[in-house]
Length: 373
Ligand SMILES: *Cc1c(COP(=O)(O)O)cnc(C)c1O
Image (cartoon, rainbow, N blue to C red; front, side, top):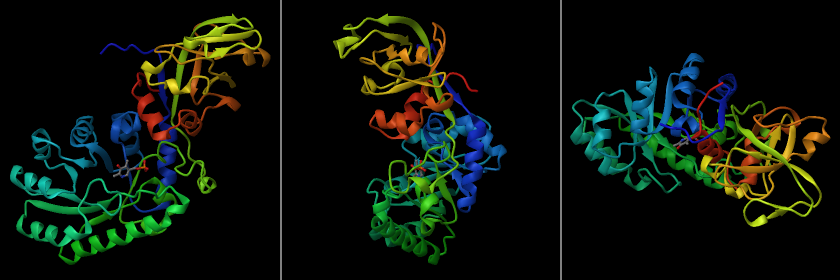
């Protein structure tokens, strides 16, 4: 595929490994969640490194992601959080080395009909997220179904938390725990020795009562604090973001006092300014919402975006670079995320300017991944 992008996504696999080893201290069996290309960090590379650190189970989204991960050489247990969607997925599952989440009778029936030997599955419960999963009321019917269909072999039970990252969400989380525990007990009392998993990053770090046999951890692995911006922010220390993103400087010039820049002239220089035109834009998933809002980091100096972010270009005011005794020229790399010194752009900050969350910043900027460092 031809790359139209000049931006580079750098992944520090040592940071990922350190985060994983730190998280292992919080509860038994940390399962790295590496759906959506490991949150943009690169499925095969991330799994390969974490396997070296001792990880032997991984969670991805769709079944085809699980098949890709297996093809990349992963020898661990692979879980598909979204389960089978179509006949191709049923074929992929026939090998029996992927454990799908299953949360609906239709899916169970289709699996029972398509598989040639018993298939290990994780029974997914809806305990409050209201997206996918068996409800509490369906548990008796579920157990009846399992008794009648030995082709389905429940080895795990799962659910997902809606507000574990919110300090005032304890009541909802508490009710989710209660519903989950009762569903797990019902399965176990019926003879199904399921291994329970409920916690995401936030719950693993903060809600000891959510810790079960296994925990599914995503965002914290990539170095983000799930409580950023809340009163629990200080509860998490030592995680290091693994992704940095750079783009090249294409042009540097003076923007004279009174002159406007970029579409709509939404920025007009209040005095002579030095601006750099950077080779990144919304076509590279660098949101137009960052216009006149975000900053980049050049050699440790914060430089503000001036004017509108365009399709493949963004302008920044680099007057501060000269003031700091540094110089900037065509061909230099500038950081959109991360970078050296005091100017480091954190994922939380970039997400804030972008009015989104770190998960989205990683996933969309990660789509530009071309090289790894
Ligand atoms: C994405 C996901 C996780 C990981 O969530 P984080 O907040 O990134 O830790 C865990 N479980 C399920 C079902 C998920 O979809």
